[in-house]
Figure 1 (spheres, one colour):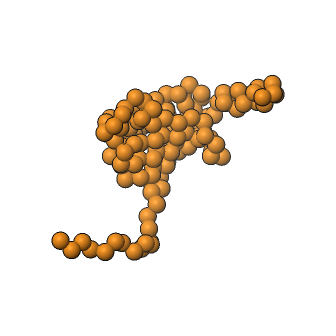
Figure 2 (cartoon, rainbow, N blue to C red):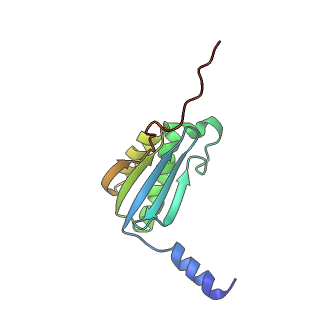
Length: 130
């Protein structure tokens, strides 16, 4: 690896952002928080599994809260002051993650639910005959 590319990678990783987008992906097994800049390039991410929760404890609201606090604290260290929040997924940690972000002190411009909803897409499986 050349010296120039290593230096540019370090500079890219350390860049500070004033405004960003916080994506909350709340699944049934894990909650993933991704902080991006306004162009959509990832600055940092955190998840319940990365915060040390394993197994069924990963899918709890408390684990989602810990992941959100971890992500927002690290992004505020990089200079984040204002953010938009995009919530996706039906998981149990979506509300507590949003509450943790609200308490953190970051100014939220808007909160949007971007969960994909089918417009009567795929045919459901046939009914069980028991």
